[in-house]
Length: 333
Image (cartoon, rainbow, N blue to C red; front, side):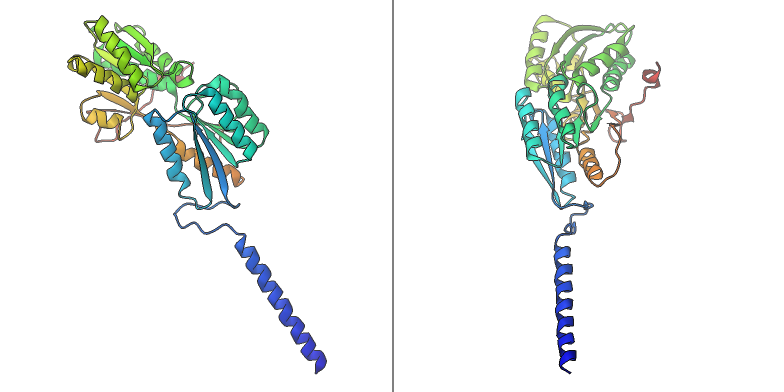
């Protein structure tokens, strides 16, 4: 009997140890996501995000898209930094994320070439890095997410030719940051589309995507030229700045305004209110960056480049979802 009681006590101890061990394992599992998104196979996921600047509404929307997607995942934490249009500040932010050993990095480079090196350092440190909208030199990045900016500029030019060819229209081009790939590529596509038409670009300036800069340049234009038919801003903020300058001089009804970004609260709203004649909606891809970062962390494969489809809106299609951009001639070699 003494032996049986001893064996029984040992059995109880073993059962208790197994129960405690299982409980401890349960505590180390990822918490259940109650926010509707999927969970990942590891604990807290830390993503560092360096935004080029928060003076552009479209980049503010990118941060909002990242935040909205991240909040679907209970174990995802995003560290946000604003480079304030300072390349050296942005380099420092990336180096800080790398030193901290974050799980992934999302970056909207102010300019491609100066940010190529720190982005490559993240790759060398085995930290996935997602380059948003503005390309860097070479292929030392994890994934590029953005639009085909040549197509965006081309779409603007095609719209102008369709509306104004044969009228010898005078055009003002308020370019985006020309040392960035979107600025340079939108200009390239625009020039390609109007080539051979009778549209004349009478003034062009790099306003660096900023509304205040565009307004100042447009004030100068209005003082120099008696005839302006169309204003193309590299983004909607620039186009809106030009509109405000024209309105202040009482000339806004003399010309058409077209921009790019097409946010519901900005470009599309301007079209609805008759401020812009047309805008192109270019999604920021912030949500895609978070989704693909988590896929990669979970061992899934992702593409090297993700190009997002864009849509043109004007008064004729604003309520029907716009017109998807598709130019087969651009794909021909």
